[in-house]
Structure formats: structure tokens, C-alpha cells
Figure 1: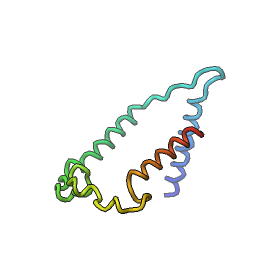
Figure 2: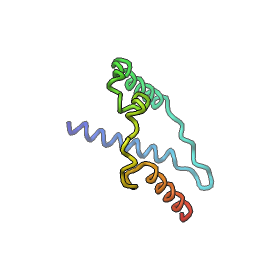
Figure 3: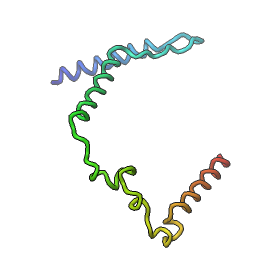
Figure 4: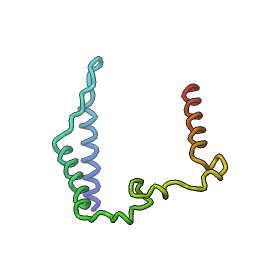
Length: 111
């Protein structure tokens, strides 16, 4: 076990030194562009495929379960609070949106 650890550390050190040497360029020259290796491209494709398989294997949630969670599945009368007019200004939607917009404008002017 210890031998594998030492070999892993040596391999990582060697790879790091090779990578550092590959990206050193003489003064006055532009830095080289990093190009994705075929192994990295294959790894990304494998990861996307692995992430998509559980999605294809599971059933979507029923519409009743999405009610109240998804905007388009919630009836319009349940989306709004009928008592909002009786709340103080700091608990209502429009006054808070106005305060937030004013703060954004003031901070953009200052900075």
C-alpha cells in the first residue's frame, strides 16, 4: 500500500513538472493555447452519458406532485396572496422590488 502511495506521488510530481515545462515559453512570445486532449473529450462524453442514464431510467413526477412547486402547474389563484394588501410595506412584493431597484441604481452610479 505504501509503495503505491509513493509511486502515485512520484507520478504526480513528474506530470506536474512536465506540464510546467510544456507551458514555459521564451520572453516575448505568446503563451500557447491549451487544446483539449482526446482523453479529456472522451471523459466528458462518458460523464454526460453516465449522468443521462438515471434520467432515462426514472419516471417523471406526476403533475399533482408538482403543484405549488412549479409555476406553470400551480393554479393562478394559488400563486398570489389575497392578504398581501394588508401586510406592512416590507412584506409586500412591489414595494420591496422598488427598494431593490433603487439600491441597484444607486450602487451602479456610485461604483
